[in-house]
Structures are given as structure tokens and as C-alpha cells.
Length: 190
Length: 190
Image 1 (cartoon, each protein chain N blue to C red):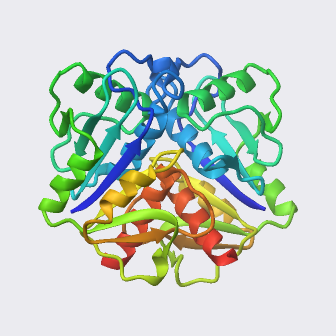
Image 2 (tube, rainbow over the protein chains, first blue to last red):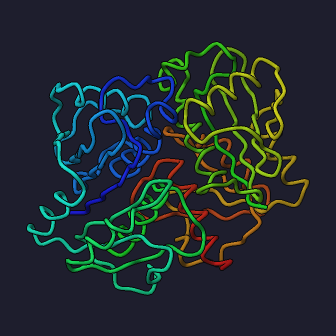
């Protein structure tokens, strides 16, 4: 399984953010929604082999981990507003197939994934060139938001089997990184 | 310059679509917005060397070509709602730097680009593998929406210098195709 972890420093952890202001009062919930869309959708379908975990640290009650499981997701659309509506619902404790919510933080999530035997790729501007390494199909990709992954959290991941990787000299959006990683993995597995 | 042409069969050609229903009454305006975002934004900046033309054929007054020029764009954000607001504005004849609107169709746009000496890449599931060709940096990439490019329009492009290319066996979103093409061009030019 392909897994992505997005560290979303400002993303709202309560359901009261307005759909009319995902970038501002949603705490860059637009970034979060784009990442979910890039991770799980292809044309006319979902990537059933993929899961994305959003680690939200914005107000009012951080941290929260919201996980979208491609194998169980139903009735959601890939546009930012629809995804934000589903996030609001699960933050209001309404259930939805394929979306789970837990009041845990980044390090607890990493512990869990490591206990399942995960290999971690940390996206980092000084990492190894992704085109020069033999990329694993089943791995967890750790991605920072528009501000980046805090150093403390990055160091935490390095306790476990990991590699720092880079997509080159252009700083892409987190959602674009996910699309590119999927593409490179798709081509390798073809 | 890198240029993209998106054929958006259902995209609204008037300003009255609701921001609360970009996928439905906007005529998949969410797809259009995601393509613009993927074409023009990278982290903390715009791609000044890129232009994207949206050819909209939805109601009420098709066709319309809306062009976003990365070298002149100002004060726009990469989220779907913000981009849709700018599209509504230019469809209401309000001016915005870097966004132009014209009441022309696909073939007239292709004629213009060809007159400027464009080389066209047509994204096509049976095209040549993009990783096996020597991709040109300065070209026009023709992309269909979620329904695809009409055959008649595809045939029209083949009057001019062109190549059909494929990104592999996975059918990606139009916006994901744009991100992948940018990535491959970025890596070639690095």
C-alpha cells in the first residue's frame, strides 16, 4: 500500500471553518483538500491501494489525524469544497466510510506506522534524487505543508527505517509532490 | 514558453454559475480551476514561463477562450474557489491582469498558436510514451477534460506539426497530467 502523511500545521481541528474561506479560516484547508484529491483520485476512479493521513495542528483542538482510506471510501468527490465538507462532517463526529478521525499527534501516528513495518520517505530539498534511487512501492511518504515539516518531527521519523528524498530543484506544492510520486511509482510498476 | 490548452466541454461560458456548485452548475469548473492551479503555481510562486488556455463549450454562450498568462498574473490564489471567482469576473467583462477572454472556439485558437509556430503535443491514450521521446520545452500541450477531446478537434490539430503522447496506462485527471508534464520538463531542463 502507498501511504502519505501530510503535516498540516494550521489546518482546522474543529468543524466550524467556513467553506467560503478554506485558505484563511480553514487554515489552508484548500492545501489539505488538494492533497487528498491528488492522493486518492485518478480519472473516473479511486486509488484503492492508497491511504492519506492528514495531521492537523490548527485551532481549536489540536492535534487531529484524519485518514482517508482509498479502499473503503464512498460517495466523495475530488473538488476542494466537497472534500472540505467531508472533513467538517468527521470533525463533527459524523461517520463516513473510509474516513477515520483520531485525537492523536504526528509522533503517535509515526509510531503506529512503524509498528506495522513501514519504510518512510521524507520529502526534503536536500534529499536523494528520487529518480536516482530504487523507490519502494509500499512505503509511507512524509510531506510538509506550505510551511514545511518541523525539524523536531523530521528527526523523530529518522529513528525508523527511512530515506530523505527530493523531487529536484523546483519547490512543488504538497499536492503536486503526491501526483509526481504516484506517477513515478505507476511507471515503475507498469 | 510552455502552453496548455484544456478543452472543457461543459464549462460555463457565463458568470452566473454558483461558487457552491462548481462541479455541477459550473460545468466541472472545479476541473478547470485545478488545471489552472497545476499549470501556473508552484510553492510560493507562479510559473512565469507558462500560459494555459481554457476552451469552454458549456452554456449559455459558447465558445469562450479564457487564457491565464503566468508572466502577467497578479493577486490570484491557487484554490479552486478563488480561481472560479476570477473566471466569473472576466466572464462579466471585468478586467484582470494576466487573464484574457475571447469569444472564439478551439480551432481558431489552434490556428493562432500554429501561426506563432507552435509544436503541438496531443495527450492520447494510444500516443507515444512520453518517457521515450525527446520532449520539447517550448510546445503546446492539448488536453481533454474528463470526457476527452472530441475526435473532430483532435484531427484539426493534426494539420499542424504535432505528436500524440501518452503518460502511461493510468488515466490521470487533466490537472494531474499537467503536473506530470511540468515535472518531466523541469527535470529535463535542470
